[in-house]
Image (tube, rainbow, N blue to C red; front, side, top):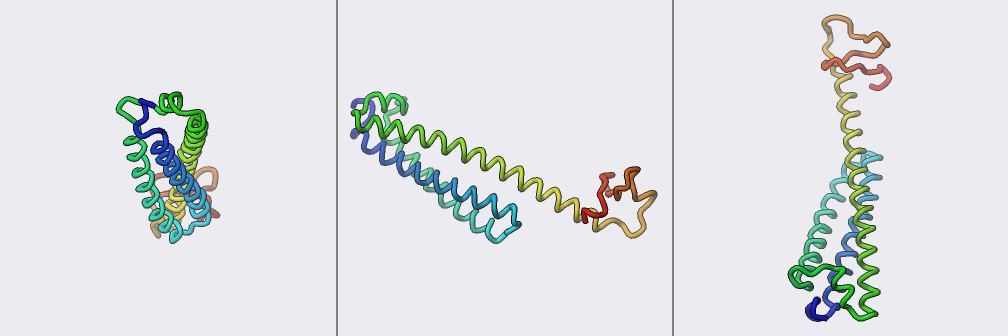
Length: 159
């Protein structure tokens, strides 16, 4: 086991900690999406604090993983050099982490887009409600939409 100092045990332990932290981030990501959809800003604040704690846990586990592997070593190399029992667990952890990280990245991007849409809609509603009392020119577009300050149209029902 020359490629993995102190055997595969330290690496497996670090990867398990990393896996647990990523799973918790993923659960928080699902909660975040529900909070965005429901407009629960208090819950979003709680989730943000919990995410910060989990990111700290991810960073600590990643430092442990790096310390468990020599410079230039790869996880694939560690897997190939491990005992049969450790090899199976390392391969499982690698597959699980890769899938969970892809899902986490996807969920974060979806939440970002959803939050952006919500914020844009809110801004448009505020713009529609705060038009000048006596606007210059026609306040309606040709298709019956209320014209905004930046020449964006708003349906009156959007407010």
